[in-house]
Image 1: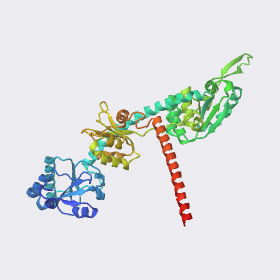
Image 2: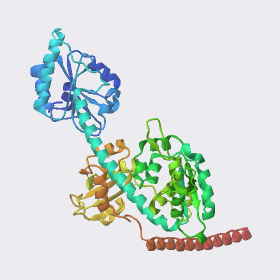
Image 3: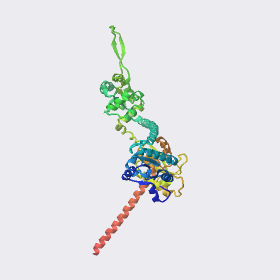
Image 4: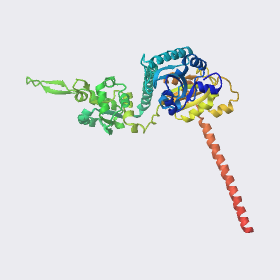
Length: 496
């Protein structure tokens, strides 16, 4: 494009919008320099003067300039929704170089260099370094490596935080459950020890323990970590873990009648883990008895694999919190009888801030991705330490906040599960976006505290009461209206 009229701009840079136009462009001989852009941000206009000068003074007929809208060209789809200027150098029907950014001196140097390279290639003095359009260029590969590394670092931080948060939720739920499950306990048998119950059940009868439920589930990794959260010997036993994740185990929910007391945990542990003794005569024939210690039930059911790794055969929780975690993971229907189901945790999310004057386009994007926008609000600034809410809903901001001021922000709590949605909001030019979900949680805790946006119960009750009153008034007037209409009809009939 030139600084002149639009017609002269089109003569300088061909405008490419379709696959057919793209094919015709890349078939041209010489060096082709293409400014690749997306519809929402437009081509780079700051380089127009430099490009015109190069075309006239250096390139001539051997230099072709174009702007290409990636939205309608299939082989450029990886450049869609990008805001940074992208310059593609094409020769011989393939990519020979690629540059990101609006660095005019660097772009000039690259064009001059690639013009010389193309001239040498045309004279058969050198071979072109050609890259197919579907492959990443070295510049893209380097950029991708940096982005991948950064994303992995963020993922590590978020996984660690999510695991800590999950453990905290489990601990709190277990503490709430504990008073309700004093008469319950759990046994888990590994696949090789399903018959182990036979040597245990006989010991339970005198204790009054019975089987309340029994399942043969295929454990998930999440269940495994919840059940054995306080048992590192099993949690860190990769062999024992792999077996439980590959084959069904047997889980038994035990119950102790209330009249027998509330120490079922100790009773079951004694049956599984405590040693017993047997009386046996010595080999010398002496009648004196010697006490010989027997293996515990847990030891009898333990085995080893071919590599000598130890595999337990049975497990029962070591304490009340572990017991609650195991029952919650294995018998949710039982838990639901005395405690509310655990609400699903929120997905990882970010705080994203936009200038409030952009609210129309941002709210349109919010409407397109309603399930990913968890909350929103209007604030005096995007600084969590020094901000004030000036509108929970768009209507409240428009109607109740009459005096709009520069610097006000529309802030959204955005799920980051769908990367494409995050990129779509990023393309709208936010003034701030959380670096990761951990920072997002901290920032959103300030912008959207517990109860944010919820109407007080008394307000909801008043609204319902008013609605009921209005409905009764309308019903009364409809009754009067219908009575009058009926009277008119009767009078009309009599008159006729």
